[in-house]
Each structure stands twice: as C-alpha cells, then as structure tokens.
Length: 262
Image (cartoon, rainbow, N blue to C red):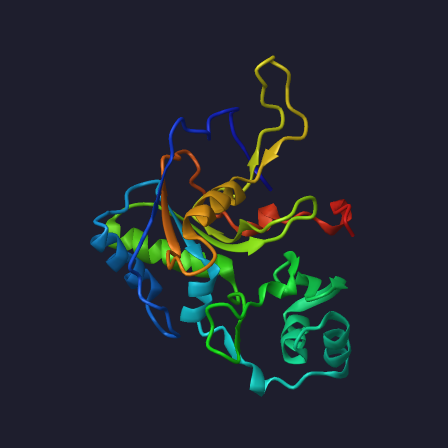
C-alpha cells in the first residue's frame, strides 16, 4: 500500500547530493556501515535526521559474499541452449536461471527475466564488471534487509533517523540507456500516493503515484558513475516527511496483472 501525502509536501526546493570518495575496495565480510562512516568522517560529514544514504548494489553484494566463481557452476541443458542462442557464457546463463522465476524475453547478449525478488530486469542483475576475472556478482539475497541493517547501524552511530536506498542500474521498456533504480529500501516511503490530491487547477489527481525512491536512485546514480569512478555511496539531504519504518521496495513493483509488457 502506498502512503498518501499532500500535493507538493514531499518536494523540497533544494536537494544536496554528496558522493563519498576514497572508500576502499569492498570484500566479503567487511563491515559496510563502518566503511561508510569512515568515508563520512574523511569528507568530513556527519549524518543528520532525514538524510538518505544511497548505496550501490555491487558493494552490498561484495560485502555479503554474493560472488560466484564461474568454474564452480555446472550449466544445465537449458543454460547451454540459451547460451548458444544469446552468445552468453552458459555458466552465466545458469546463474541467471537460478536467480529467476521466469524467462520473459531474450536476445543477443541479454535475457530478460523476472528475478526471484520480483524485479523484471536484464540478466537477473548478474554482473561481471568490477569483479575478479572468472567471477560474477549476484544481487543481495534480501536488499530490503540489507538496507535496514545499514539504516540501523548508521542511525545508531550518528544518533539520527535516516533512510537507506540500495540501487542498481536497470534498462527501461520505453527508452534506451540504464538508469539507477531502487532494489532495497529502509526507513522511508518508496512510493508516494498523490491520488485525490489537488493539482494547480484544483482538480483531484486520479492516477498519480510517485516512485520517489527510484527518482532519488537515478540522481544518485548519476554521481556514482558506471565505470572507474569508485563512488558507491551518495548522501542525499533536503527531503523531509518521508519517514516510514515499514517502507520497502515492494511497493514499487507493479503487479503482474497490471504489467502491460507481459
């Protein structure tokens, strides 16, 4: 269920986004909250109430050990077939199948699936960039839970209530190019329901819902970059009134019955 808000009440006149530099390469077992806190201190910057910490999925996955050595994967007959049809490594295809509930489309070097977490995405979010040769990085097992742990640890350290968004880059059905999307949310409303709120003409809006976590994710992703920038954490400051201790990414997922692309 989305949270109803007053028209315009969520939209500040100014937002600040600050990318943290100098974070080390993340490896399995590292305390990601501590690494972020170290980066904040080096900035120097302290978190405050209503700050939103946006974290790239890849560093979360690395810290949580979601890395697979491709040589350890045994491709199935289906993985070999789809690998031949798409030009993808059958071991990677097997990981895609393992992480998915359904294959929706496929083409050259891409397999569109419904991920086990409910996301419709290319290649189940599995990535080999910034991974050791012969390895692939999977999405976190439960990105909402990962976000909640970070929010609790960082909030306790700085004595404030913050939100956390874990993001990944998705393609879009209507447009070219990848854009940052939320895959895990904690401490804030991900989807705002503006239905029955008045527009500037005084008419009540009938269908407008705002995927605010995705809008924030896209902005933060533009600061992070996609290559060698090494800025996997962005602090977003300026929003207020978005707190929701029960907030998760699930509210952003369109029900299958309303998905006109399937």
